[in-house]
Image 1 (cartoon, rainbow, N blue to C red):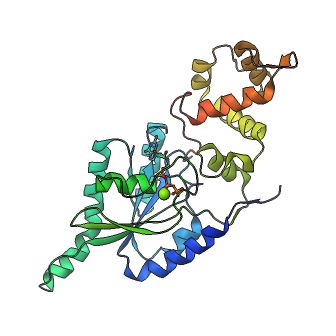
Image 2 (cartoon, rainbow, N blue to C red):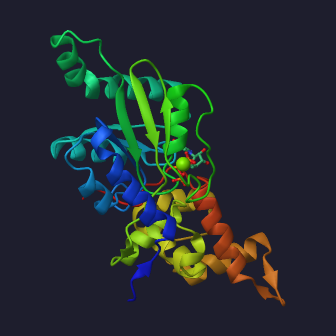
Image 3 (cartoon, rainbow, N blue to C red):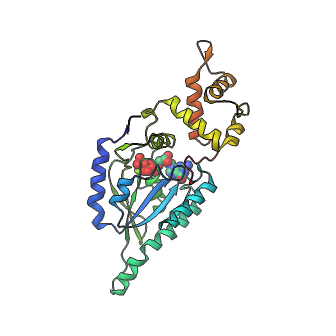
Length: 281
Ligand SMILES: Nc1nc2c(ncn2[C@@H]2O[C@H](COP(=O)(O)OP(=O)(O)OP(=O)(O)O)[C@@H](O)[C@H]2O)c(=O)[nH]1
Ligand SMILES: [Mg+2]
């Protein structure tokens, strides 16, 4: 299998800019996608920032399988990280994040107080791969639209400091991917959550991989949406059944490509329920 390369020029520049800012940053808030906590960690980015206090936030928990997210949080805690999950569109989750983030600042504030200084805002760098919700996260904490957001990978192109309160200043950074993936499954997972463009991988391969995964781990979700699919169906027969039932036809035959595309879109948009694509097992 060939490596999957996906490292637009601006990402190298963004990575250098992160390294350059480290000396003035107190801590790092690393956002991972709760559906793919392993594939959404950029190990290079992690290594560059490994000496800083860190909070790991598993975003988009509303799209992930809640019980799997809890298992992942326990795992991150066990290996020594402060970790929290969130649906960034939920106020209660933002409140939980703020109090967790404040615990990152305590040591610095205590040190400043003990020196007779006024506690200064914590400067936190928000990092992660594209489309995990970094800019959304900052806007929610700041309670205003300070950083631009879009549902496409690579939307933020440059760094931006945003004062979110008297306690915090957050640095929005462009999403950065590792320069290549040796493991094709990671690339597939990234495409499924929209962190790399879907076009990097063949559509039917993406659909087949996800169908097989759902059949193995989330068969009930599959049948809830497509009640005519059974355990005996493989990808080809299932996708052809979907085409037939929905009337997707091309030149008098089932339109397999359209059926695969619709299947993928429904999966990505949460119509098959809350799915975690990487399980801690
Ligand atoms: N369902 C759901 N969507 C979210 C959540 N957080 C962010 N989003 C959506 O995810 C998309 C990407 O959000 P951004 O904040 O632009 O992501 P980013 O990490 O800044 O992306 P880049 O700038 O490309 O690196 C937007 O459509 C957001 O509305 C969440 O917790 N749940
Ligand atoms: Mg952004």
